[in-house]
Length: 88
Image 1: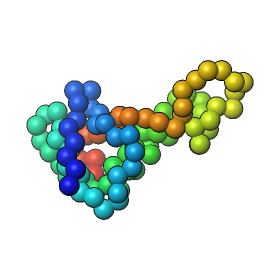
Image 2: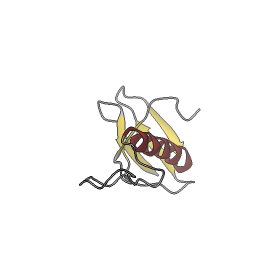
Image 3: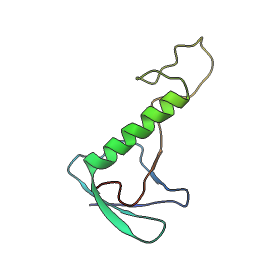
Image 4: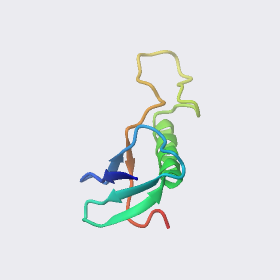
């Protein structure tokens, strides 16, 4: 079992996928808690990564097709927005 805490902005720290069947408990900022599977949080991570890439004009693999400039990697995010009831 993995236990995570939501921060004041509504995010959890998640740098990678969790094993699909692992139970994960998130304690939300309002004090409530909810249990999710790794598969559910992995889907939220994938959605957040796709949104990040779209906002930064990156392709599906995280690469910019614009002329080369110094830029960070498009394949990494650390925080995923969560809310109570998202697993339902």
